[in-house]
Length: 132
Image 1 (cartoon, rainbow, N blue to C red):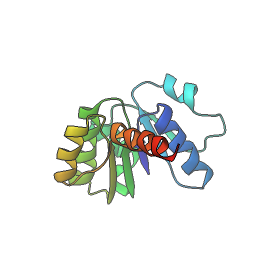
Image 2 (image 1 turned 30 degrees about the vertical axis):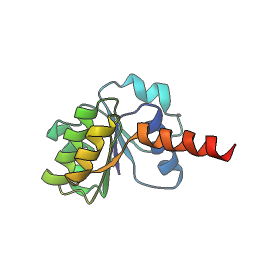
Image 3 (image 1 turned 90 degrees about the vertical axis):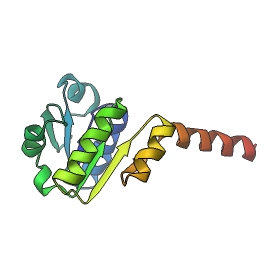
Image 4 (image 1 turned 180 degrees about the horizontal axis):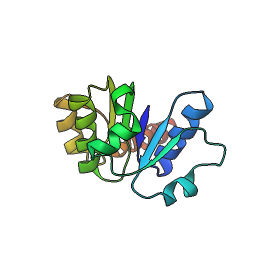
């Protein structure tokens, strides 16, 4: 499993999967993010680099990866890296976070498995209001 983006969501996913015994590699262009968000006990690999660079992906083990998750703050970066993982390296499970709900639907229609926090958050708030 390769996770692109060691922010709040990426690091929490990496920690949870690592604790379950999964083989996790997390990528981020800023090495400080690893110190900021990952505990010393994290047993996965940490790779500093840009995940839209194919050489970085190869160094991270993309050719053997069973999953790739793009969780940076940039929709364009997430889409590009997800397409590289899916179409160039043939990773079987690829998930891409897209903040823009309109673009999220477009990329979903093109075959990417997408998560749109804007849509998810809206649904959750609406459900909480209806339950009150």
